[in-house]
Length: 321
Ligand SMILES: Nc1ncnc2c1ncn2[C@@H]1O[C@H](COP(=O)(O)OP(=O)(O)OP(=O)(O)O)[C@@H](O)[C@H]1O
Image (cartoon, rainbow, N blue to C red; front, side, top):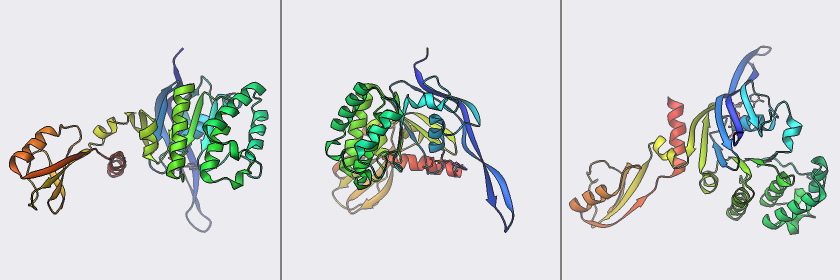
């Protein structure tokens, strides 16, 4: 048996859309939301699934939960075809949508959990154990009797994550789990997910626009755009694909015209300080030596490429190709 827990092979999703083109006229056209995606996720991995708005991320997640049926290709989660056996699959997966809640709005948090226990037919001992663990790790003790509508966004999100985990799913899909949260709440959610993945070996597929989530949680990232997989690999590898640059920031004894050194270009000057961009994959040592030899150098620092800028560049390059 393969250790791959999620497998997609040439998966497609095409939507038929009717567009109004006149008073009584409507035109039919097709949107290829997912256009032949292939990837595998082994058990226990935590993977980032990112892309610009409308790239096809939510459509992929909906196919992985069985809400949507693929138009083509083959998709399996825990050996199950999600669209055909959605109920059986539900026992294996947990889903958290940052923008929506699965909790009952007017009920105290604990009542939502009790309803879920019944829905998923979770054995008493297991329910008690999982609830205790979530309450402790997600800091929910003081919130259990509070109606969901009175919870802050960060509290509600922690409540939703617990709800998704009460039935011990083997895989957790997270769609924007830190959206709108403050710095402290984000750190809490990220810390919990890291421990969950490391401790229980839960497989996690994480969709987010916050790249710090990815940097802090995922070693592997998949980038999707226009329904196609543009990149699948380690986060660091994005720098190479995106041809990113590092920055050498130099402080000189006095203000000078832009420095002229091989393999770097001055992108900014501010008094005696200058910023030199050079390829991220290149060593900074020869560049530093060249600057020090020819110019009156006082101080320097090297800045790593900003992953956000790398991805923005990837999206932009794609848009113009
Ligand atoms: N039910 C639907 N009917 C028609 N078109 C749809 C439907 N759902 C999604 N689409 C289209 O499919 C494409 C992909 O949408 P999807 O929601 O998967 O993107 P996304 O990557 O999740 O975007 P975002 O980051 O904005 O949430 C978009 O062009 C969207 O308009």
